[in-house]
Amino acid sequence: MKLMLTTPPWKTTEKWPPLGLLYLAGSVRKERGDEAVVVDAFCHNMTVEQLVERVAKERPDVLGMNCSTHTFNATMEVLRKARELLPDLTIVLGGYHATFAAREILSEYGFIDYIIKGEAERSLPRLLDHIEAGTEPTDVDGISFVRSDGELFERPLTLVEDLDSLDFPDRGLLGDFEYGYMFQGVPLTFGKFTTISTSRGCPFSCSYCSCAAFSERRWRPRGADSVVDELEMLYRQGYRECVMVDDNFTHKISRVEEICQQIKERDIHMRLYCEGRAGHAQLPLLRMMKSAGFNVIYFGAESSSPNVLEYYNKKQTPEKTAEAVANAKKAGMLVITSYILGAPVESREEMRSTIHFAQSLRPHGVQYNILDYLVGTPLWEEMKREGTVKDGDWKTNHRVYEYFPEHASREELESLVNEGYGSFLGAWKSGSGVLELVRTMMVNSTARRIVMGNLTNPAARRMITDGLKGF
Image (cartoon, rainbow, N blue to C red; front, side):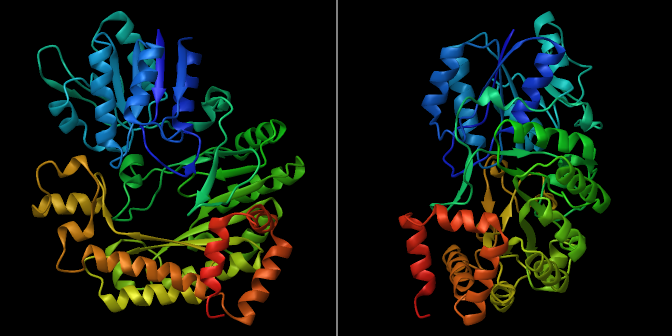
C-alpha cells in the first residue's frame, strides 16, 4: 500500500522537522515495506487547499495526519475534503488532541476511520495489516474506531517502551527544505539544522501541560550510545545545529554526563539546544554540557509567585529558577526562560512581580504566554468537572480570559505580555548588562552566530533599537 503522512496546514516560523512522522514512516517501511510519503504542510505554510491538492496528487491508500488543539479544525477540513475527492481513502488520525478527544471526534466526524492514541510506531504497521486484510483492528494497541455494527471500540493509549529499538528518523524523506528557528523575524539558527528526540515522556504533572497524561507520567530515555550514534550520523551528514526536543532532557544527570563525554570523545562539533529543569541545573553539569556543545538551554520558570506555582503544580521554586539561570550563565550558555500570565488565582501584582522577576534574572531570551486551557491537561479536566467547559469547546484552544473575563481581560493580559518583553530588553540597559553581553559573545559561538547572522536584518535592528531607547 501507499501511505501518506502529513502535518496539518498552518503558518509558522518555528520550522522544526516532524520527527514523529519520520519515526512512523520508518516503522512502516521496516515492518511492512510499504511506500511512505511524508509531507510537512505545517512548516511549508501550506493552505488547506494546497494540502488537499497534494493528497489528490499522491493518491495514497492510507492518509495519516497528526493534530494539536490549535490545528484541529484545519485538520478536519483537509480530511473532509480529501475523503470527498478520494472516497476509497482510509483516514487515520493521531497526535495529542486526537488522543484526548477520540470519542468526540469519531462521534462527530464520520470520515475519520481510525484514531491511534499515544505513540504509534508499533500500532500503525499492525493497523495497516488489518486495513489490507479488510479486518477489524481490535487487537491494535491504542486504537479507537467505530465497528461495523456502529459501536465505538477503544483500547488504552500505547507507548513505546524501548526507544533504542526504533530506527533513526530518515530526514531524507523531507527533501531539501531548509529547517530552522526564527523569533519575531530574527533567525536564531544558521546552517544545516535539525532536531533529535533522546527521551520521551514526563514524570511531572504540571496542570497546564498535557505531556504527563499523554505519556502516563513515564519518562523513557534512549541510551547514551544510541543518542550519540545519531548525533554522529547527523554531524557526518553536515548538520551543525540541533535541538533536543525532549520535555526533560536533563532528568537523569548521569545519562547527560555520558552523552556529553561521548560527544567529545567522538569529536562531534555541533551547536546544541535543550530544555532543562531548574532542579537539574548544577554548575558542574552545565559546564560539562557547554564543553560538549550545548550552547542554549531553556527553563520553564512560569511564575515568581509560590501561590501560582502551586496552582500549576510546578514543584519548583523561584529561588531554584534563579539559581539555574545564574549557573547556566556562569557556564557560558545562552539562557531562555518562559512565563505564563493569567492564572485565575493570580493577582495583577503577582503578574507584574513575575515580569520584574524575569527582568532581574536577565536571561538572554524570554517567552511570555497567556494561560491556555488545552484538552487533556489537568486544568481542562478540572474545568470539565466544574461544568465551566461548554459543548464544542474541545475543538479549539481557549485562553483564560474566555472563561474568567472578570479576572483579567484579553487586552490587559496582552498588554502585560508586551510589558514583559519590553522589560526584558530594558534589563540589558546598563554597563553590567553590556559587559555581560560582551562576555557571552566571547564564550558562546551561538551568540556570535546569531549576532553576526542578523547584522543586516531589519527586524533584528528594529528590536535592538527599540531595546536601546533611553540607554
